[in-house]
Length: 208
Ligand SMILES: [Zn+2]
Image (spheres, rainbow, N blue to C red):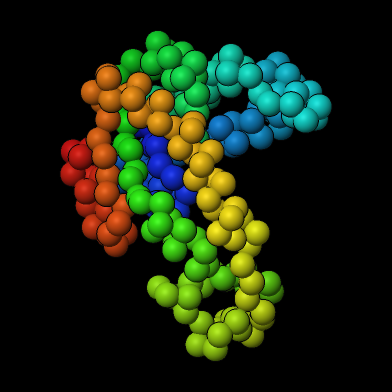
């Protein structure tokens, strides 16, 4: 089973990916991991990526596609894979569509205001990294970690303004991809405004 996951931050995509990975025993592949591994292994493509990133530039669509293709040819991806964070642009999607054979797309849907509520309510312990949420998982004493007594804080990424920016970038990048995959009718929508177990059930039902 070859899978692409699309979805905004805070939708529970990572949790679903890990559930799908365990259920179908296929690798969860992100472009960040591919770049890091290629650089570490010092492959030809890895050397190119390193020089681009070292110069503070963006990795081109062509190079990203070549690296993804190389990763997907590894033995562990023979029975399938879950792609997360790729494709991110229409040229990447078109190139992937040519090399991929059959694949499915899950489109995780969550309204912006719910994303903001979920992410802006997160509080993280400065000391041990434990994650709390002011509504769904509050600490016993406000601002204090239950596990170690450390101070809880809001990551800069989880500030409302930052979340709205991330959503804007996501919408601009992803809306054209949704149209692209919808036209190929290989896409299923997943409602993320429900508890994780119910979401997982929907995902497995769709995948069969
Ligand atoms: Zn703590």
